[in-house]
Length: 413
Image 1 (tube, rainbow, N blue to C red):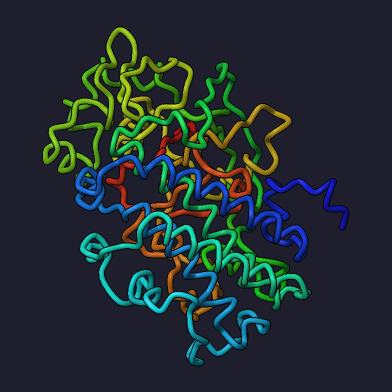
Image 2 (spheres, helix red, strand yellow; image 1 turned 45 degrees about the vertical axis):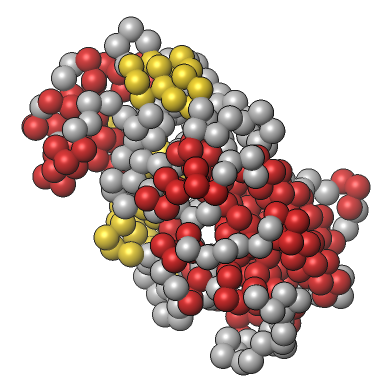
């Protein structure tokens, strides 16, 4: 492989890249994590407590956990070269930090307990992260084949996902982003909705078709016969969502599901999370600053309840997963745009037929594990890494979740 020509941001390479490419990508991911940590280091520990109330982990714990996961599955596991065929119960080699398991193993406690731990100093944490990555890169130098590269690819996938979680934490805290690695949210010109003829659509990946990394939520195969449908070319923007609010959308029970109306009543919502004003222009709190959002930016921090209510008001509906994926994979030349926000779909977080029965490795994020109580998000947010932007990727969340960078698009009812 020609390293000089390698695209370190390429999402397909993140699933199938060789050892040389993975080495570059893992270093890039770690540098990105360290930049986020630097942005949080100016925040006193006491000021981070609202994150725990919101169900978010301490940023330093997230970074340490990513390093620990690499150690646990790559440098400390004597069968790591066997990939998924390894015996997960085998004893591990010792960590470079004797406190690491007690501090960063998520299987030892509930998430809330992570706030009661005395985490390492910033320098000690950086030393641990540097040491674990160095050991991983040494082992990776001689690795070849999908089995040997399985856990390094997983490690990259997990650490890249931290970018979204750090951005959520920064938004929840109102953390200024002068030094944080995040770009501006794009605004999109309005495009006509796209029509698709009736057709059969396959979702997922069959076990005998696995090549490279395929996360558990994408395994198995689901065939669906889709009738003719029409889907928005881009997510619903603030201009379109504001019309719903101005029309009394949050006051009309008829637009909401039973669960959605209970959520509105419980929270007293009259606008999306972080929004201060919608009438006469959108004003929202974004990373510690009051900003006027561009009307053609995708509406964000929306629950699935709000997405469903808007669709009922507009006489439309949320897309099925299959409809969204079909449009995302084949509609680029027709103006279909995605990657601005995670997008709610009408699906539940169920595994595809024939998915592996085995549980994912310890430390696997909950939002990547099928759970019928959760809803499905597709796409990616502008706050995350380009390597995560695959149309087949699935992410799961509670329908009332609004701390993430979530929005939606609609289909004709």
